[in-house]
Amino acid sequence: MFEAKPLSSSGSKRDFYASLAQQLTGLLEGEPDAIANAANMSALIYQLMPDLNWAGFYFMRGPGLVLGPFQGKVACVRIPVGRGVCGSAVERKESIVVPDVHAFPGHIACDSASRSELVVPLVKNGVVLGVLDLDSPSPNRFDDEDREGCERLVAIYLAASEISPDP
Image 1 (cartoon, rainbow, N blue to C red):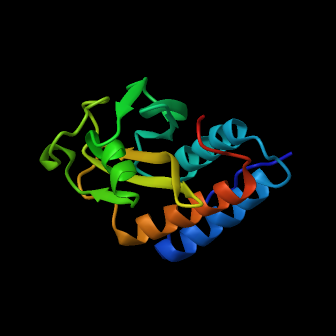
Image 2: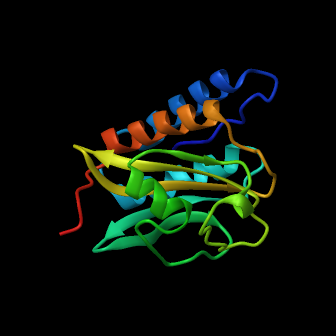
């Protein structure tokens, strides 16, 4: 049985993400189901990463993103490509760090308490399959170290999971 281990708050962010990546690798080991892995990854991140109010996935379904497994308050169900932070990350095929969501043009406010956001696209063989979305009630919560750490987590998720484009 897997048990999440609290991560030291006294170390660097690099150490934090290295430990989180190690735990995620163990958690996903031997399980290829993309939805089950997304659910467990969301829970692990939400449980161990400080200062979050939402952690979860959106998956590409037809012309846009559809809500997947998450932790936090209820969320927007559908997001068009190019709209909001998640849709913009899909359109650009790159991660987006938003220090202040109120300053992001076209931000979609699913939870009015969110102040900053980090979105990492799930890109496999050049195709965007979805996004990992993290929200915080604190402005400027995320930086490039968080982006790099979460990109590493997404790479672990993609390597472990059998996930393919929506037909």
